[in-house]
Image (cartoon, rainbow, N blue to C red; front, side, top):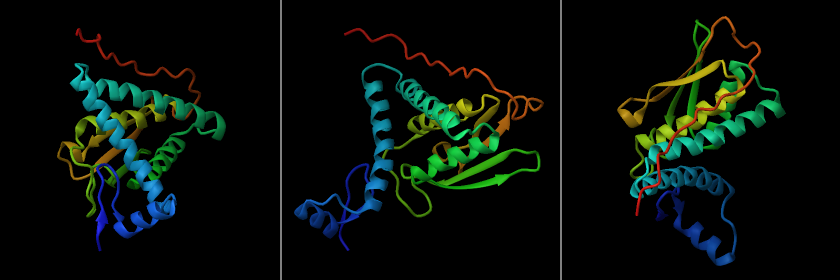
Length: 205
């Protein structure tokens, strides 16, 4: 079978692409979903590279943008779905990962922590699937900032940290959810303080 292979997009059988183009159809629903999720990562990656080319710190720019999105989405979810606990935060991030077509497993430890392992994502690949050429630690770290900001917006006492990343040579992407203050637990959490990221001054022409 011949495939349509476009930078940043999942493969599509060539006959389906031609059929959709000829008939003016939007294409298969499953492809639109996968294309949207993969395209988000490509935009993030190219935004970071473009900022670097212009003299900014591209990784800081990416982290700032993604942390703002995570904070806003986390706040909306907290208010509208009444999610406040650590398990709520875990469930929300896992839902977001499914939206982005990320293969993930969850384990609860005896210490009351939650550990997630992402074995495949549409950008780095894995489990027999190819990723996006050039995807590396910078956009990956920015996407992790999005998840961390979302978790903090849901409950500032819950911390998500990554102990292993495949973009830095790990065998998986492993995230650990912990309480910042064990005694506070899932108790009252007022006033989310988002992390401010400085991108530096605009470079002189």
